Image 1 (cartoon, rainbow, N blue to C red):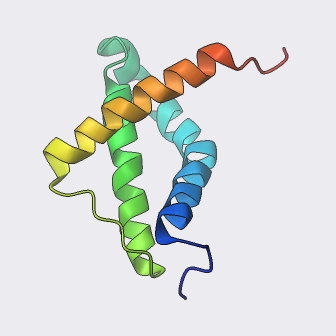
Image 2 (cartoon, one colour):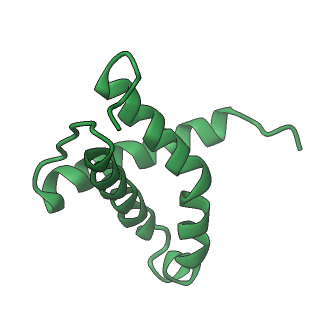
Length: 96
């Protein structure tokens, strides 16, 4: 099934946003003991895993996303995603 978005980048961003909304909290809870043990550094690995899952699934639905070799480029992107998520979570309040 090909992507019906205006561009493949937009589709992959949407897919990544959906995974961050629904799957990442489950992975984060699963990795909570490691999160405490590594003082939060496991969040880079969780974000890298999310990027790899999106790349894998996007190829199956007809979107071409290439994150390059796993260790270097995916972890660099995970660092950026981690810091961006941290800034957004600090600046946006959930109302509670």
